[in-house]
Amino acid sequence: MKILLVEDERPLAAAVVRVLADAGYHLTWEGDGRKGYETAMREEFDLIILDIMLPSKNGWDILSDLRQARKTMPIMMLTALEETDDKVKGLELGADDYLPKPFEVPELVARVRALFRRDKVNKSIVTRIADLEIDRKNRHVTRGGKLIPLTRREYDLLEALASNEGRVLSRETIQERVWTDEESYSNTVDVFIGTLRKKIDAPFEQKLIHTVHGFGYVLKSEHP
Ligand code: CA
Image 1: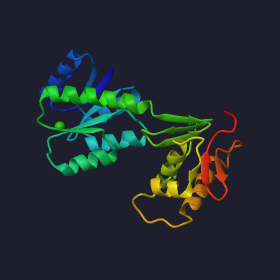
Image 2: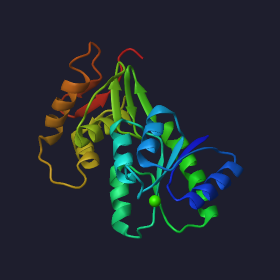
Image 3: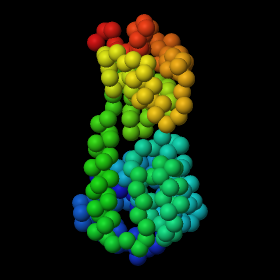
Image 4: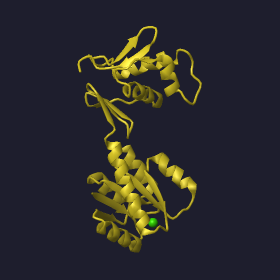
């Protein structure tokens, strides 16, 4: 398991490297933000541990640029700033965990192990139906290997259908599952099915979303 540590405090970095290497991980250390970012882009890592206050490029920018570049490895943020705002910001930008400094080293090791466990579980959560692939960890959808950008609602709708592959879902059931937190209208489901079809089915010969008249919809492959 390869870990990249981007941390400019030498004594802290040395301690982290030592402890994680002892725990059996392969460590790469960068003390500079920009270099850390470049290393993360160039090489494959299973985890990145990222300080926030860094020379030349701060941890927030590194995190956000890596996620923009569709780098999906788990990222743990370290910070001396003990404000909960930071945690919220980090999680919004796509951090997987957040460890305030100062921390106890065993705590770090436990968190690293937990992240690896979680990542392993998440990685297995890919649904495939014909040539459609839904990656639940990253909420990415591809068909025939091509990324299909979906809005949050369209994604939720597709996931609701896909997790019930071959089962007909009524409009009411879909509405309850997908529009849990906001008002929706009687034709909302139909409207969103329409936009989803344009993206998922229209460009392809094999249609996956099927209408069950007077009832609802089903996602299935006709040639299993
Ligand atoms: Ca720092």
